[in-house]
Amino acid sequence: MNNKTILAALFGFIILLSAACKKEKEHEEHENELITTVELSFVKTGTSETSVFTWADVDGPGGQNPVIDDIVLEANAEYSFTVRFLDQSKNPEEDITEEIEEEGEHHRVYYIPHNISLTFSELNKDDDGITLGLYGKVLTGSTGSGRLQLILRHYPNGGKQESDSPSAPAAGTDADVQFNVILD
Image (cartoon, rainbow, N blue to C red; front, side):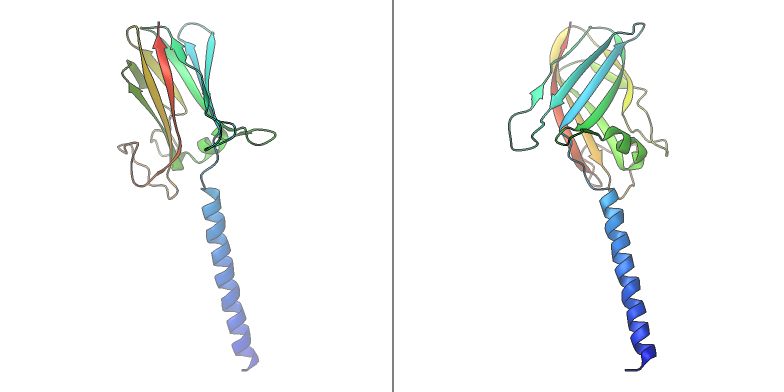
């Protein structure tokens, strides 16, 4: 082989290698994170009183059962709320919420009430104007109890649509947690 052939083959190999590394890096940027803790904070409209409720499975899946606070809110009231996602298996803990917000087009939070009257509205949007759901408002109904299912979905290739259901095939699940809810 002559030098030109060897240089062309080497150049081609370098291009393939750099493309593979770039693809791997793009994939790493959108990998699912370990979420050990979900924290919901509520502030009743017209007050500054904050109530924080936590779902925590610090040792991760398959270990001890998660520790879950009951969400206790006033019936027939309006609250603003925020949600945070943490990885507390690390020291110091990592707040994954910032990354979720930065990569909003790749994430969406769904709030699904079961046997309880909770109406979620004014959920925040990503840069494309599609629901992200890290904060918003919730209107509580009459006295009662039930469950709130919170699902964080991850769209690794983007393509999130406002009409997507919590089980949209374009997304995977980063977190799926349930809280007992009591409306007093």
